[in-house]
Image 1 (cartoon, rainbow, N blue to C red):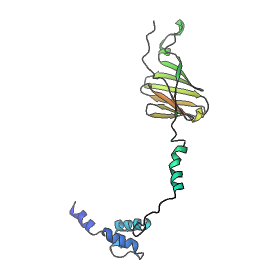
Image 2 (image 1 turned 45 degrees about the horizontal axis):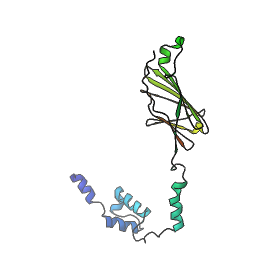
Image 3 (image 1 turned 180 degrees about the vertical axis):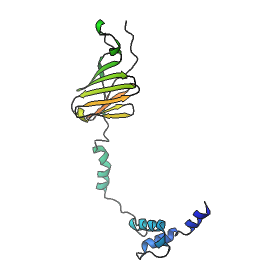
Image 4 (image 1 turned 90 degrees about the vertical axis):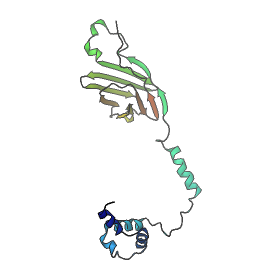
Length: 195
């Protein structure tokens, strides 16, 4: 501690003096009039009086039960139902017609998944600066859904469309919608060799 700081702290009121000043409602005098730190301490002690008070009373049992029941009733705390999506279409797995093969189709991928009453259609496009993704969810409450890609959360627009980009394509995708957590199958982005 520097001499300058030591001299400054030696001038401050002790804890007992601060408590006494907080209990005394007279105007601040002497050191308190000139020291902002001690004024702030006294103001806080007056606002949150704890000295000389009786201990807090025991709350009524009904209040304790009501407070402990809050997490059970809360929608946010309720665990999401886990659903596994089924891959129904993958453009990289389906054979291409002879006249359709080419560079354009190798840089794009379309994936469709189904889970319960939900359908997810994902289109991925490889660009020089990374991947562009567009997904659409169909089902009840789809416009309120959240798409989770790794650690990133993408929110749906009013048409239940999700749009994002990343340097690498996603391996893990899940969707949180209407109390359900839909886990898509793990995606491999290594294009299979077609002969």
